[in-house]
Image 1 (spheres, rainbow, N blue to C red):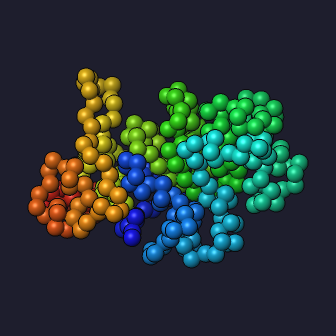
Image 2: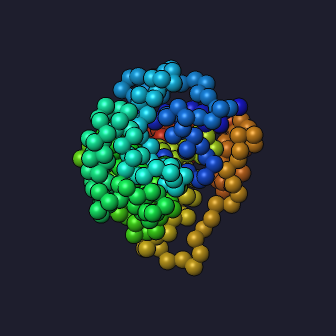
Image 3: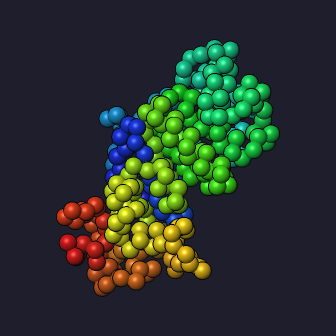
Amino acid sequence: MPVVEAVNLAIARGSTLALVGESGCGKSLIASSIMQLLPPFGRVNRGVISLDGQNLASLDERSLQKIRGNRIAMIFQEPMSALNPVFTVGAQIAESLLLHMELDNKAARQRSIELLESVGIPDPQVRAGNYPHELSGGMRQRVLIAMALACEPDLIIADEPTTALDVTIQAQILDLLHDLQERHGAAILFISHDFGVVSQMADDIAVMYAGRIIEQGSAAEILESPTHPYTRALLATTPRLDHKADRLPAIVGRVPSPFERDAGCHFRKRCDHAVAQCAASYPELIARVGSHPCACHVVNANV
């Protein structure tokens, strides 16, 4: 049974593509597919996952190990789960340097200290000898970013990297990602459900619902002129300083599981604009004249 299908994304070097949607829509599964770290029951049935023309889906595990952490790195949502509690953070950063950069122990340790300093951790020489539980949440997230940058990857996948952080630390992490991207020129796939965060990070945005991309375009197009009813509903639930309301609107219902999907539009049961055609077939993701691609029968009928 397909969980994610008909997804077509491209990220240029030095740019950020934000993948946006509610929990359960398949965003993290796309990240796992790119890294080829799917659960045992999951597999890529068809399609290409291309990194500079190389199809990652066709590689064996040994070849993939040379790419993970080296050319593609991932920043996880929950650092306490991603970091090993029994090793110091310096040792964990040094691990990928020893594996991919062929540095000796002394050089790898020195480089790990430099990386901690580059992500704004004070007293990096001391902190390199700390265990994850000895650091704050913001510092642990910075350690994950340092690990991701260790081998200067071509692509960084950031899976909701600021969700567990307070607003002040969140802003610091976003600024840090911007600065590091400018320095290293990496492409970033930024996964989030928060348009407020995405507006600060993204060059392009793809909106995902129930395993499919339902709208995509530049950040300016999606944020200023959203066309899909789901995108408009998501944006309406984002708090804004220029809009005062006693209560934020909510999207009624939930994302359907793969077992509940049929041939029609998966959003129709939550949509105020649904028509008979929405139950009959799934809408194509097509670009209207003068606009960006959207998968909605009602919107596309008005082309």
